[in-house]
Image (tube, rainbow, N blue to C red; front, side, top):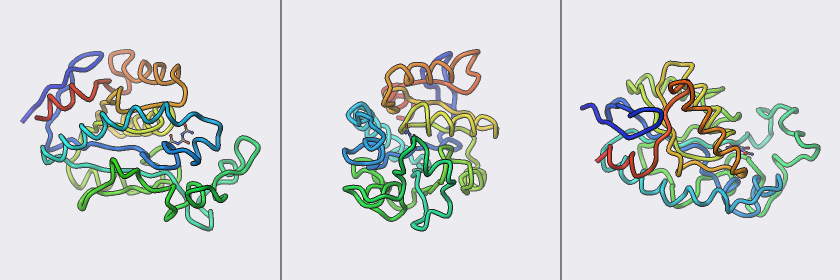
Length: 220
Ligand code: TIU
Protein backbone atom coordinates (compact mmCIF):
# COMPACT_ATOMS: atom_id res chain seq x y z
CA UNK A 1 0.00 0.00 0.00
CA UNK A 2 1.32 3.42 -0.93
CA UNK A 3 2.07 5.66 2.03
CA UNK A 4 2.79 9.36 2.07
CA UNK A 5 5.42 11.02 4.26
CA UNK A 6 5.55 14.79 4.70
CA UNK A 7 8.95 15.75 3.32
CA UNK A 8 10.92 18.37 1.45
CA UNK A 9 11.00 19.45 -1.32
CA UNK A 10 7.63 17.67 -1.63
CA UNK A 11 5.77 14.77 -0.01
CA UNK A 12 7.44 11.39 -0.35
CA UNK A 13 5.44 8.35 -1.44
CA UNK A 14 6.61 4.86 -0.62
CA UNK A 15 5.43 1.30 -0.14
CA UNK A 16 6.59 -0.29 3.11
CA UNK A 17 7.01 -3.63 1.31
CA UNK A 18 9.66 -2.16 -0.96
CA UNK A 19 11.24 0.27 1.50
CA UNK A 20 14.07 -0.42 3.93
CA UNK A 21 15.12 1.57 6.97
CA UNK A 22 18.91 1.97 6.83
CA UNK A 23 20.90 2.88 9.95
CA UNK A 24 24.32 4.17 9.00
CA UNK A 25 27.24 3.63 11.36
CA UNK A 26 25.60 4.15 14.75
CA UNK A 27 28.86 2.80 16.19
CA UNK A 28 30.47 3.47 19.52
CA UNK A 29 33.59 4.74 17.71
CA UNK A 30 31.56 7.66 16.35
CA UNK A 31 29.04 8.50 19.07
CA UNK A 32 30.65 7.57 22.37
CA UNK A 33 33.56 9.29 24.09
CA UNK A 34 37.08 7.91 23.42
CA UNK A 35 36.28 6.53 19.97
CA UNK A 36 37.45 7.43 16.47
CA UNK A 37 35.27 10.54 16.27
CA UNK A 38 36.73 12.00 19.42
CA UNK A 39 40.24 10.93 18.38
CA UNK A 40 39.75 13.12 15.31
CA UNK A 41 39.11 16.04 17.66
CA UNK A 42 35.31 16.06 17.46
CA UNK A 43 32.65 16.72 20.10
CA UNK A 44 30.61 13.50 20.11
CA UNK A 45 27.76 15.03 22.11
CA UNK A 46 26.65 16.71 18.85
CA UNK A 47 25.91 13.26 17.42
CA UNK A 48 24.05 11.89 20.39
CA UNK A 49 20.92 14.01 19.76
CA UNK A 50 20.08 11.70 16.85
CA UNK A 51 19.85 8.58 19.02
CA UNK A 52 16.49 9.13 20.72
CA UNK A 53 14.49 9.98 17.56
CA UNK A 54 16.24 7.13 15.74
CA UNK A 55 15.10 4.63 18.40
CA UNK A 56 11.51 5.73 17.88
CA UNK A 57 11.71 5.34 14.09
CA UNK A 58 13.41 1.96 14.46
CA UNK A 59 10.61 0.74 16.72
CA UNK A 60 7.97 1.97 14.26
CA UNK A 61 9.68 0.31 11.30
CA UNK A 62 9.96 -2.98 13.18
CA UNK A 63 6.30 -2.77 14.19
CA UNK A 64 5.36 -2.12 10.54
CA UNK A 65 7.34 -5.20 9.46
CA UNK A 66 9.70 -3.17 7.29
CA UNK A 67 13.15 -4.34 6.32
CA UNK A 68 15.83 -2.88 8.60
CA UNK A 69 19.53 -2.78 7.65
CA UNK A 70 22.49 -1.63 9.72
CA UNK A 71 25.94 -0.60 8.51
CA UNK A 72 29.28 -0.33 10.26
CA UNK A 73 32.45 1.31 8.99
CA UNK A 74 35.55 -0.67 9.83
CA UNK A 75 38.40 -2.85 8.76
CA UNK A 76 39.91 -6.31 9.05
CA UNK A 77 42.27 -6.71 12.02
CA UNK A 78 45.25 -6.87 9.63
CA UNK A 79 44.06 -3.65 7.95
CA UNK A 80 44.58 -5.15 4.48
CA UNK A 81 41.30 -3.52 3.43
CA UNK A 82 42.30 -0.06 4.65
CA UNK A 83 43.99 2.02 1.97
CA UNK A 84 47.17 3.75 3.18
CA UNK A 85 45.62 7.06 2.17
CA UNK A 86 42.82 6.48 4.72
CA UNK A 87 45.11 5.04 7.37
CA UNK A 88 47.34 8.08 7.46
CA UNK A 89 44.79 10.84 6.79
CA UNK A 90 45.19 13.87 8.97
CA UNK A 91 48.88 13.26 9.56
CA UNK A 92 48.37 10.87 12.48
CA UNK A 93 47.45 7.22 12.39
CA UNK A 94 44.23 6.42 14.25
CA UNK A 95 42.60 3.43 12.56
CA UNK A 96 43.84 0.19 14.10
CA UNK A 97 45.45 1.87 17.10
CA UNK A 98 44.39 0.96 20.62
CA UNK A 99 41.58 3.10 22.03
CA UNK A 100 39.58 2.75 25.23
CA UNK A 101 37.10 0.50 23.38
CA UNK A 102 39.63 -1.66 21.55
CA UNK A 103 41.38 -1.04 18.25
CA UNK A 104 39.74 1.88 16.52
CA UNK A 105 37.45 1.02 13.58
CA UNK A 106 38.55 -2.61 13.60
CA UNK A 107 35.88 -5.30 13.15
CA UNK A 108 35.19 -7.34 16.25
CA UNK A 109 36.29 -4.59 18.65
CA UNK A 110 33.83 -3.06 21.11
CA UNK A 111 34.19 0.44 19.68
CA UNK A 112 33.41 -0.76 16.18
CA UNK A 113 30.07 -2.23 17.21
CA UNK A 114 26.66 -0.58 17.16
CA UNK A 115 25.46 1.30 20.23
CA UNK A 116 23.12 -0.69 22.51
CA UNK A 117 20.22 1.75 21.99
CA UNK A 118 19.98 0.82 18.30
CA UNK A 119 21.38 -2.69 18.33
CA UNK A 120 20.24 -5.01 15.50
CA UNK A 121 17.87 -7.86 16.22
CA UNK A 122 17.74 -11.24 14.47
CA UNK A 123 16.95 -10.95 10.78
CA UNK A 124 18.35 -7.43 10.35
CA UNK A 125 21.39 -7.58 8.06
CA UNK A 126 24.58 -5.82 9.15
CA UNK A 127 26.73 -4.48 6.32
CA UNK A 128 30.41 -4.15 7.21
CA UNK A 129 31.92 -1.58 4.90
CA UNK A 130 35.51 -0.42 4.45
CA UNK A 131 34.55 2.97 3.03
CA UNK A 132 32.21 5.84 3.70
CA UNK A 133 29.58 4.66 1.22
CA UNK A 134 27.65 1.50 2.13
CA UNK A 135 27.56 0.26 -1.48
CA UNK A 136 31.31 0.31 -2.06
CA UNK A 137 32.90 -3.16 -1.68
CA UNK A 138 29.84 -4.64 0.08
CA UNK A 139 26.87 -6.87 -0.80
CA UNK A 140 24.28 -4.21 0.14
CA UNK A 141 22.96 -3.75 -3.41
CA UNK A 142 22.54 -7.51 -3.88
CA UNK A 143 20.62 -7.81 -0.61
CA UNK A 144 18.33 -4.90 -1.50
CA UNK A 145 17.62 -6.18 -5.01
CA UNK A 146 16.89 -9.71 -3.72
CA UNK A 147 14.29 -8.26 -1.37
CA UNK A 148 12.79 -6.04 -4.06
CA UNK A 149 13.68 -2.88 -2.15
CA UNK A 150 13.32 0.36 -4.12
CA UNK A 151 13.40 3.08 -1.45
CA UNK A 152 15.60 3.73 1.55
CA UNK A 153 14.72 5.70 4.67
CA UNK A 154 18.05 6.79 6.07
CA UNK A 155 19.32 7.61 9.56
CA UNK A 156 22.82 7.66 11.02
CA UNK A 157 26.12 9.41 11.39
CA UNK A 158 27.69 11.47 10.14
CA UNK A 159 25.36 13.37 7.85
CA UNK A 160 27.87 14.77 5.37
CA UNK A 161 30.23 11.80 5.41
CA UNK A 162 28.79 8.27 5.50
CA UNK A 163 25.10 9.21 5.23
CA UNK A 164 25.55 11.56 2.29
CA UNK A 165 27.99 9.27 0.48
CA UNK A 166 25.58 6.35 0.81
CA UNK A 167 22.62 8.51 -0.25
CA UNK A 168 24.46 9.50 -3.43
CA UNK A 169 25.53 5.93 -4.15
CA UNK A 170 21.92 4.76 -3.70
CA UNK A 171 20.51 7.53 -5.89
CA UNK A 172 22.90 6.67 -8.71
CA UNK A 173 21.79 3.03 -8.49
CA UNK A 174 18.12 3.96 -8.94
CA UNK A 175 16.97 3.78 -5.32
CA UNK A 176 14.89 6.61 -3.89
CA UNK A 177 16.17 7.91 -0.57
CA UNK A 178 14.69 10.01 2.21
CA UNK A 179 16.92 11.27 5.01
CA UNK A 180 15.37 11.94 8.44
CA UNK A 181 16.91 15.22 9.54
CA UNK A 182 16.69 14.71 13.31
CA UNK A 183 17.94 11.11 13.03
CA UNK A 184 21.20 12.10 11.31
CA UNK A 185 23.92 14.18 12.91
CA UNK A 186 27.23 15.84 12.19
CA UNK A 187 30.14 17.07 14.29
CA UNK A 188 29.69 20.31 12.33
CA UNK A 189 26.26 22.00 12.54
CA UNK A 190 26.91 23.97 9.35
CA UNK A 191 27.68 20.74 7.46
CA UNK A 192 24.46 19.17 8.77
CA UNK A 193 22.45 22.02 7.25
CA UNK A 194 24.42 22.11 4.01
CA UNK A 195 24.30 18.34 3.45
CA UNK A 196 20.54 18.20 3.92
CA UNK A 197 20.09 21.23 1.64
CA UNK A 198 22.22 19.57 -1.05
CA UNK A 199 20.14 16.38 -0.94
CA UNK A 200 16.74 18.05 -1.38
CA UNK A 201 17.80 20.88 -3.72
CA UNK A 202 16.90 21.04 -7.40
CA UNK A 203 13.67 19.06 -6.95
CA UNK A 204 15.16 16.28 -4.80
CA UNK A 205 18.25 15.83 -6.94
CA UNK A 206 19.61 13.25 -4.49
CA UNK A 207 16.49 12.59 -2.42
CA UNK A 208 14.01 13.85 0.14
CA UNK A 209 14.46 15.21 3.66
CA UNK A 210 11.89 14.40 6.35
CA UNK A 211 11.77 13.90 10.13
CA UNK A 212 11.26 11.18 12.71
CA UNK A 213 7.70 12.29 13.48
CA UNK A 214 6.70 12.40 9.81
CA UNK A 215 8.27 9.00 9.15
CA UNK A 216 6.56 7.40 12.15
CA UNK A 217 3.21 8.91 11.16
CA UNK A 218 3.60 7.51 7.63
CA UNK A 219 4.68 4.04 8.81
CA UNK A 220 1.87 3.56 11.31
N1 TIU B 1 34.54 11.48 10.52
C1 TIU B 1 33.27 11.48 10.13
O1 TIU B 1 32.56 12.48 10.14
N2 TIU B 1 32.69 10.31 9.70
C2 TIU B 1 33.32 9.14 9.47
O2 TIU B 1 34.53 9.01 9.52
N3 TIU B 1 32.51 8.07 9.17
C3 TIU B 1 31.12 8.12 9.10
O3 TIU B 1 30.53 9.15 8.81
N4 TIU B 1 30.46 7.01 9.44
